[in-house]
Image (cartoon, rainbow, N blue to C red; front, side):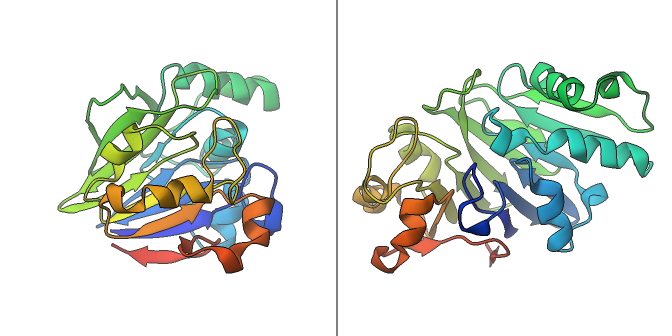
Length: 243
């Protein structure tokens, strides 16, 4: 499995980084983990053709994690996509995406298309299969209008785990256990921020994760200013990892 961080930043573009958008490639299948509002720009800057995406997995329904979907869907419509696109996420994902489309481009959610958008609601700790992968969601702690999720994605014998946005919860230990790669939020260095993780907390549990590789993402200004003090791998836009 190949993992590419198209966007590794926080909600506010600190450090000039794009909002969360992570590409997973396995065989001929392409899946996004989250699709923040800047994702179309991030994909085009990295030479990723949006029409080749099979699915989008959403951890939660904040704009910096799903706000790129109206643009992705409309781009596919205007360029005559024909293959289905699967969008999987928390309870209410279809309503929230359609509502966002109507807010941004009135009438766009009701326009006929050559392709089907298939919505899938992910349930806590219930595995789902789509686009050649298996995903197991775990409910975490992040107020976003719907149950927020961390995701454990498997393809063959490879496992990529992703925390999404959350404050500390022991569910992260289940997510990361024996994963080949654990992508974990570290919004601040050591300052507690409700519904988010800080570097000190993440590293206090590093040995308990049991993952082969840990990469920190969703870095805020505090973390970006203290990277010299960070004893962990940090994501950046364009980082590619072979799992």
